[in-house]
Image (cartoon, rainbow, N blue to C red):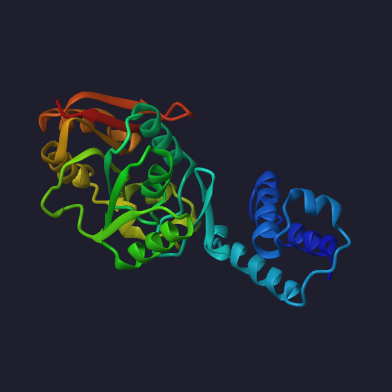
Length: 280
Protein backbone atom coordinates (compact mmCIF):
# COMPACT_ATOMS: atom_id res chain seq x y z
CA UNK A 1 0.00 0.00 0.00
CA UNK A 2 1.21 3.50 -0.87
CA UNK A 3 0.42 6.66 1.06
CA UNK A 4 -2.06 7.90 -1.55
CA UNK A 5 -4.10 4.70 -1.21
CA UNK A 6 -4.05 4.94 2.57
CA UNK A 7 -5.41 8.48 2.45
CA UNK A 8 -8.12 7.43 -0.01
CA UNK A 9 -9.10 4.57 2.32
CA UNK A 10 -9.29 6.96 5.28
CA UNK A 11 -11.38 9.49 3.36
CA UNK A 12 -13.78 6.80 2.26
CA UNK A 13 -13.99 5.05 5.62
CA UNK A 14 -14.49 8.23 7.63
CA UNK A 15 -17.12 9.80 5.38
CA UNK A 16 -20.05 10.70 7.60
CA UNK A 17 -18.11 10.17 10.83
CA UNK A 18 -17.37 13.88 11.14
CA UNK A 19 -17.48 17.11 9.16
CA UNK A 20 -15.10 17.11 6.15
CA UNK A 21 -12.68 19.58 7.79
CA UNK A 22 -12.54 17.46 10.93
CA UNK A 23 -11.93 14.34 8.84
CA UNK A 24 -8.97 16.04 7.19
CA UNK A 25 -7.61 17.02 10.62
CA UNK A 26 -7.96 13.38 11.71
CA UNK A 27 -6.07 12.20 8.64
CA UNK A 28 -3.23 14.63 9.38
CA UNK A 29 -2.96 13.26 12.92
CA UNK A 30 -3.06 9.66 11.70
CA UNK A 31 -0.37 10.26 9.09
CA UNK A 32 1.88 11.91 11.67
CA UNK A 33 1.32 9.54 14.59
CA UNK A 34 1.07 6.24 12.71
CA UNK A 35 3.36 6.81 9.72
CA UNK A 36 5.52 9.70 10.99
CA UNK A 37 4.62 11.88 7.99
CA UNK A 38 4.04 15.58 8.60
CA UNK A 39 1.84 17.61 6.17
CA UNK A 40 4.83 18.38 3.92
CA UNK A 41 5.71 14.68 3.72
CA UNK A 42 2.09 13.87 2.88
CA UNK A 43 2.12 16.37 0.02
CA UNK A 44 5.45 15.19 -1.41
CA UNK A 45 5.36 11.44 -0.77
CA UNK A 46 2.01 10.30 -2.13
CA UNK A 47 3.62 7.36 -3.94
CA UNK A 48 5.70 6.22 -0.96
CA UNK A 49 5.33 2.62 0.14
CA UNK A 50 3.98 2.18 3.65
CA UNK A 51 4.96 -0.60 6.07
CA UNK A 52 3.22 -3.96 5.78
CA UNK A 53 1.04 -3.25 8.82
CA UNK A 54 -0.48 -0.11 7.24
CA UNK A 55 -3.62 -1.61 5.72
CA UNK A 56 -4.59 -3.48 8.89
CA UNK A 57 -3.80 -0.49 11.09
CA UNK A 58 -5.89 1.87 8.96
CA UNK A 59 -8.84 -0.54 8.97
CA UNK A 60 -8.62 -0.78 12.74
CA UNK A 61 -8.50 3.01 13.15
CA UNK A 62 -11.51 3.49 10.85
CA UNK A 63 -13.49 0.85 12.73
CA UNK A 64 -12.73 2.44 16.11
CA UNK A 65 -13.51 5.96 14.89
CA UNK A 66 -16.82 4.75 13.50
CA UNK A 67 -17.61 3.49 17.01
CA UNK A 68 -16.97 7.06 18.20
CA UNK A 69 -13.75 6.25 20.06
CA UNK A 70 -11.69 9.45 20.37
CA UNK A 71 -8.75 9.56 17.97
CA UNK A 72 -6.49 10.72 20.80
CA UNK A 73 -7.05 7.44 22.65
CA UNK A 74 -6.48 5.46 19.45
CA UNK A 75 -3.11 7.06 18.72
CA UNK A 76 -2.33 7.47 22.43
CA UNK A 77 -1.42 11.17 22.37
CA UNK A 78 -3.02 14.60 22.43
CA UNK A 79 -1.52 17.98 21.62
CA UNK A 80 -1.68 20.55 24.42
CA UNK A 81 0.11 23.88 24.75
CA UNK A 82 2.52 22.96 21.96
CA UNK A 83 3.50 19.52 23.28
CA UNK A 84 2.33 15.96 22.89
CA UNK A 85 0.90 14.32 25.99
CA UNK A 86 0.24 10.66 26.46
CA UNK A 87 -3.46 9.98 27.05
CA UNK A 88 -5.29 6.82 28.01
CA UNK A 89 -8.92 6.19 29.02
CA UNK A 90 -7.75 6.80 32.61
CA UNK A 91 -7.49 10.55 31.89
CA UNK A 92 -9.49 13.22 30.14
CA UNK A 93 -8.34 14.35 26.73
CA UNK A 94 -6.88 17.88 27.15
CA UNK A 95 -9.06 20.60 25.63
CA UNK A 96 -7.99 23.77 23.79
CA UNK A 97 -10.01 25.85 26.28
CA UNK A 98 -7.80 24.61 29.09
CA UNK A 99 -4.78 25.88 27.17
CA UNK A 100 -6.28 29.34 27.67
CA UNK A 101 -6.29 28.73 31.43
CA UNK A 102 -2.57 27.94 31.29
CA UNK A 103 -1.93 31.07 29.22
CA UNK A 104 -3.88 33.19 31.72
CA UNK A 105 -1.76 31.89 34.61
CA UNK A 106 1.53 32.39 32.74
CA UNK A 107 0.60 35.93 31.67
CA UNK A 108 -0.37 36.98 35.20
CA UNK A 109 2.50 35.35 37.11
CA UNK A 110 5.89 36.51 35.91
CA UNK A 111 7.90 36.07 39.12
CA UNK A 112 10.34 33.20 39.49
CA UNK A 113 10.41 30.30 41.97
CA UNK A 114 6.64 30.23 42.43
CA UNK A 115 5.10 27.26 44.22
CA UNK A 116 2.20 25.79 42.22
CA UNK A 117 -0.43 23.14 42.99
CA UNK A 118 -2.63 21.48 40.36
CA UNK A 119 -5.62 19.78 42.01
CA UNK A 120 -6.95 16.84 39.97
CA UNK A 121 -4.14 16.75 37.45
CA UNK A 122 -5.28 13.90 35.16
CA UNK A 123 -2.74 13.64 32.35
CA UNK A 124 -0.68 16.35 34.01
CA UNK A 125 -1.21 18.72 31.10
CA UNK A 126 -1.76 21.83 33.24
CA UNK A 127 0.95 21.10 35.81
CA UNK A 128 3.55 20.12 33.22
CA UNK A 129 2.77 23.08 30.94
CA UNK A 130 3.14 25.45 33.89
CA UNK A 131 6.39 23.78 34.94
CA UNK A 132 7.70 24.44 31.44
CA UNK A 133 6.39 27.99 31.07
CA UNK A 134 6.87 29.58 34.51
CA UNK A 135 10.32 30.64 35.67
CA UNK A 136 11.85 27.99 37.94
CA UNK A 137 8.44 27.04 39.34
CA UNK A 138 8.09 24.27 41.93
CA UNK A 139 5.03 22.34 40.82
CA UNK A 140 2.99 19.84 42.83
CA UNK A 141 0.04 17.94 41.40
CA UNK A 142 -2.35 15.31 42.67
CA UNK A 143 -5.16 13.10 41.49
CA UNK A 144 -7.42 10.56 43.13
CA UNK A 145 -6.59 7.99 40.42
CA UNK A 146 -3.31 6.10 40.59
CA UNK A 147 -3.70 5.29 36.88
CA UNK A 148 -3.91 9.00 36.10
CA UNK A 149 -0.85 9.70 38.23
CA UNK A 150 1.07 7.06 36.27
CA UNK A 151 0.14 8.79 32.99
CA UNK A 152 1.10 12.20 34.38
CA UNK A 153 4.41 10.85 35.66
CA UNK A 154 5.23 9.45 32.21
CA UNK A 155 4.34 12.77 30.58
CA UNK A 156 6.55 14.68 33.00
CA UNK A 157 9.45 12.38 32.21
CA UNK A 158 8.88 12.59 28.45
CA UNK A 159 8.73 16.40 28.55
CA UNK A 160 11.69 16.61 30.94
CA UNK A 161 10.13 18.59 33.76
CA UNK A 162 10.05 18.00 37.49
CA UNK A 163 6.56 17.75 38.97
CA UNK A 164 5.90 16.24 42.40
CA UNK A 165 2.94 13.91 41.89
CA UNK A 166 0.93 12.30 44.67
CA UNK A 167 -2.46 10.74 45.30
CA UNK A 168 -5.14 12.76 47.06
CA UNK A 169 -8.86 13.47 46.87
CA UNK A 170 -10.05 16.96 45.94
CA UNK A 171 -13.00 16.50 48.29
CA UNK A 172 -10.65 15.77 51.21
CA UNK A 173 -7.22 17.16 50.27
CA UNK A 174 -4.18 16.48 52.37
CA UNK A 175 -3.07 19.07 54.95
CA UNK A 176 -2.13 22.20 53.11
CA UNK A 177 1.34 23.31 52.17
CA UNK A 178 1.85 26.91 51.09
CA UNK A 179 1.44 27.87 47.44
CA UNK A 180 1.60 30.96 45.29
CA UNK A 181 -0.74 29.48 42.68
CA UNK A 182 -3.45 26.84 42.98
CA UNK A 183 -5.20 25.70 39.82
CA UNK A 184 -7.90 23.14 39.17
CA UNK A 185 -10.07 21.89 36.33
CA UNK A 186 -12.40 19.75 38.45
CA UNK A 187 -15.48 17.77 37.44
CA UNK A 188 -18.24 20.31 36.78
CA UNK A 189 -20.70 18.89 34.23
CA UNK A 190 -24.11 18.07 35.71
CA UNK A 191 -25.53 14.61 35.07
CA UNK A 192 -28.53 16.18 33.34
CA UNK A 193 -26.21 17.70 30.73
CA UNK A 194 -25.21 14.26 29.48
CA UNK A 195 -28.02 14.27 26.92
CA UNK A 196 -26.36 17.06 24.94
CA UNK A 197 -22.88 15.51 24.93
CA UNK A 198 -21.19 13.53 22.16
CA UNK A 199 -20.84 9.77 22.37
CA UNK A 200 -17.05 9.94 22.06
CA UNK A 201 -17.02 11.70 25.46
CA UNK A 202 -19.78 9.74 27.18
CA UNK A 203 -18.67 6.29 26.05
CA UNK A 204 -14.92 6.63 26.50
CA UNK A 205 -13.72 9.42 28.81
CA UNK A 206 -13.65 8.83 32.59
CA UNK A 207 -16.96 9.89 34.10
CA UNK A 208 -15.48 10.56 37.54
CA UNK A 209 -13.41 13.35 35.97
CA UNK A 210 -16.42 14.93 34.27
CA UNK A 211 -19.66 14.76 36.21
CA UNK A 212 -21.22 16.12 39.40
CA UNK A 213 -24.71 15.58 40.83
CA UNK A 214 -27.44 17.91 39.61
CA UNK A 215 -28.30 18.77 43.21
CA UNK A 216 -24.70 19.74 44.07
CA UNK A 217 -23.07 21.32 40.99
CA UNK A 218 -20.43 23.15 43.06
CA UNK A 219 -19.39 19.98 44.90
CA UNK A 220 -15.68 20.25 44.11
CA UNK A 221 -15.47 24.03 44.34
CA UNK A 222 -16.84 23.81 47.90
CA UNK A 223 -13.73 21.81 48.79
CA UNK A 224 -11.21 23.68 46.63
CA UNK A 225 -12.15 27.21 47.74
CA UNK A 226 -11.55 26.82 51.51
CA UNK A 227 -8.44 24.76 50.83
CA UNK A 228 -7.09 27.59 48.67
CA UNK A 229 -8.05 30.21 51.25
CA UNK A 230 -5.98 28.27 53.78
CA UNK A 231 -3.09 27.21 51.54
CA UNK A 232 -2.32 30.25 49.39
CA UNK A 233 0.37 32.65 50.45
CA UNK A 234 -0.82 36.24 50.93
CA UNK A 235 -1.22 37.57 47.41
CA UNK A 236 -1.43 34.03 46.05
CA UNK A 237 -3.87 33.28 43.25
CA UNK A 238 -6.51 30.63 42.60
CA UNK A 239 -7.49 29.70 39.04
CA UNK A 240 -10.42 27.44 38.12
CA UNK A 241 -12.15 26.11 35.06
CA UNK A 242 -15.90 26.26 35.63
CA UNK A 243 -19.30 25.39 34.20
CA UNK A 244 -20.60 28.39 32.27
CA UNK A 245 -23.99 27.98 33.95
CA UNK A 246 -22.64 28.68 37.42
CA UNK A 247 -20.30 31.65 37.12
CA UNK A 248 -22.21 33.80 39.62
CA UNK A 249 -22.50 30.94 42.10
CA UNK A 250 -18.77 30.21 41.91
CA UNK A 251 -17.98 33.91 42.38
CA UNK A 252 -20.17 34.08 45.48
CA UNK A 253 -18.62 30.89 46.90
CA UNK A 254 -15.07 32.21 46.49
CA UNK A 255 -16.00 35.51 48.12
CA UNK A 256 -17.73 33.71 50.99
CA UNK A 257 -14.50 31.78 51.61
CA UNK A 258 -12.63 35.04 52.09
CA UNK A 259 -10.96 35.28 48.68
CA UNK A 260 -10.72 38.68 47.02
CA UNK A 261 -10.53 40.18 43.53
CA UNK A 262 -12.78 37.42 42.24
CA UNK A 263 -13.15 37.44 38.46
CA UNK A 264 -15.32 35.37 36.14
CA UNK A 265 -13.54 35.16 32.78
CA UNK A 266 -14.77 34.26 29.31
CA UNK A 267 -12.89 32.01 26.89
CA UNK A 268 -12.01 32.98 23.33
CA UNK A 269 -15.51 31.93 22.20
CA UNK A 270 -17.16 34.38 24.60
CA UNK A 271 -18.36 31.67 26.99
CA UNK A 272 -17.94 31.89 30.76
CA UNK A 273 -15.12 29.41 31.39
CA UNK A 274 -12.75 30.44 34.20
CA UNK A 275 -12.69 31.95 37.66
CA UNK A 276 -9.74 33.62 39.38
CA UNK A 277 -9.27 34.98 42.87
CA UNK A 278 -6.59 36.30 45.21
CA UNK A 279 -5.87 35.65 48.86
CA UNK A 280 -5.32 39.05 50.46
